[in-house]
Structures are given as structure tokens and as C-alpha cells.
Image (cartoon, rainbow, N blue to C red; front, side):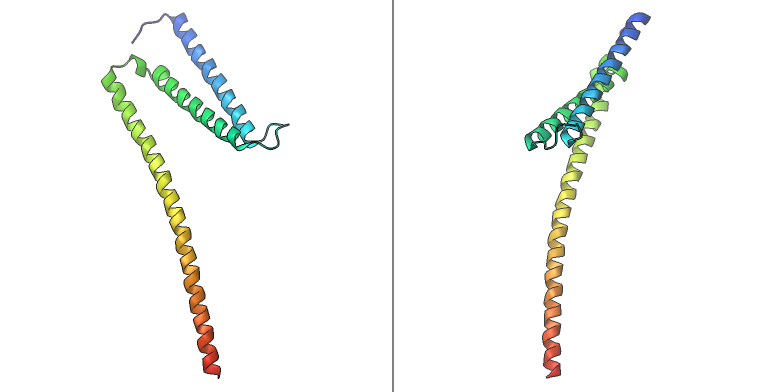
Length: 137
């Protein structure tokens, strides 16, 4: 780990604090703008929503990178130790994306199953009505 004087360490911490503060403010402004909560912006074009989403994701990833490498001291560690921390994190992110994809597939399949169930129920009801009219005659 590098040895900084007290004043240099204090300066680095405040630089990190202000960087994170400004990035968070930018994210909040983009979020409010993307949702149309800023006065004067009533209809937000779709391209602006996508752009703000990408900007927010990028800023969030940079903040996570900065926090891990600066405040968790990963930039001072040997490469092997840093990889043992970062690779499982990447696998976790991959798993979250995979679970969202799988959940979406289940949701789409569920709609198909419900539609088929409605068709089967309607066929049974129509079949019952036909048999009831035959019995009454």
C-alpha cells in the first residue's frame, strides 16, 4: 500500500467524496429528467430515455469501480487477490442478467398457458351447452 502523509490522505478522501457526490447528483438529475419530473419537460422522447438509462448505468459502474479500487484498496493489492474479489462479482452480475431473462421467458410462457386454458374452458362450456340443449329436446 502506498504511504501518504495525513494531509495527502485527507485530500484524496475528500476528492473521492466530491467525485461521488457530483456523480450522484448527475445521476439524480438524469433520472428525474428521464421520468419527466423536471418542470418544462412534459413529453420525453424514447431516445432520451435510452440515453439517460445508458448514462446512469455508466455512471453507476464508474462509481462502483471507484469505490472498490479506492476505498476498498483494491488498486494497492496484488492482481491475484483483486481477481478473486472481482471475478465472483462479475459472475453475480451475469447471474442477475440470466435470472431476468429466465423470468421474462416464464412470464411469456405463462401468458401462452393462460390463453390456452381460456380456450379449453370455452370449448368445454360450449360443449356443455350443446349437450344440455340435446337433453332438453
